[in-house]
Length: 276
Image (cartoon, rainbow, N blue to C red; front, side, top):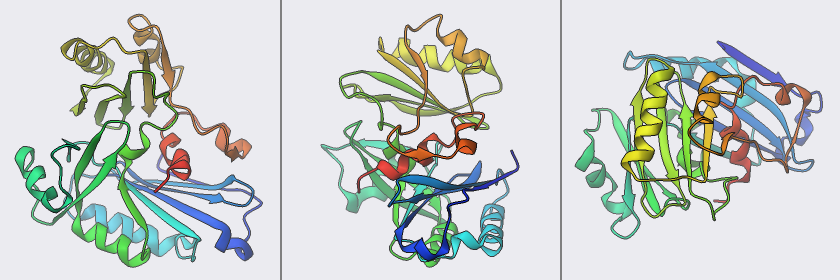
């Protein structure tokens, strides 16, 4: 999926002040969606692959998108920005965390890059703070383009739609990373693993459950995965309840959005339900 651009026929420039823009930024890709807050309908989805391991090239790709995509230039009612940084995130329990010491907490487990900015987000579903690193130049570009926008880790969206009375393991399948976290459990776990195939995925998921002595009520698969993938069916051999992450049923979607092949935009769609 190199580029995807879907705009509903109901999109109307005269009602921009009633639209909410939600952006998701990761090394895998740059995505955004637009919600018509009056009709409660998602009327736009855009995604551009930006996968790169070359320092500085990510900024060039995002800058090109902003120069080419007019939909990012309008004065929306509200703008939300979510960063996905699976291998550059650490969790800190709420009992010991202080926002003023976010960078110190980050350095306890990870070494920040030279041109990085450390941000933090509270995760209600885990009783912890996510402390994460983003590229400073990318952050500055987004601040310049969307003054006053809300900026958070995409982990704040993970617990949406998961019943609080259930213990869940959420697994997000990215291009090169497998992100595993527990939800609504007293023993919080979050980690990112590089994988090369399905056997690696199964190894890390089962290993997490065993090492954490967890018997989850639910396994939630998110990202580049659907019910046709064999990892979904293999996990059902070990866990009673395995689900593909679901988009908010209280939001309206066009027929094109309902036909997307996997769950990689579920968090983006659910971001409109997040309460800042």
